[in-house]
Image (cartoon, rainbow, N blue to C red; front, top):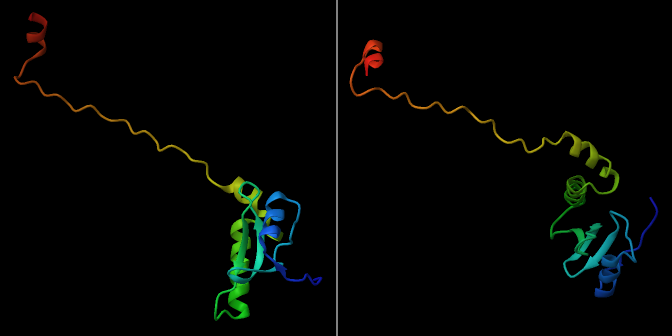
Length: 120
């Protein structure tokens, strides 16, 4: 893997990322107000840069697992191809089946016979 220098996330760099004038590779190390982290993606609609930040006390395994989960969840990098697969396998919003509601049986208040109904 080629070496990519750590990028400072200054307001100017964030603006360039938001407008698409600058692109970073997923996994590239960045430094910002929250410390150091690995770049995930930039949301094209809002211009927000998503970063998997390192937490105090993280060892390499924990940080790499967090980055891996973020990449999988966001379909980033080598997991981009899984989006179409998961989208096709996603169940569509199917409305619940309508059950036939049986009308309550109305019992007559008095007993009658068929011949009584014919003469009425």
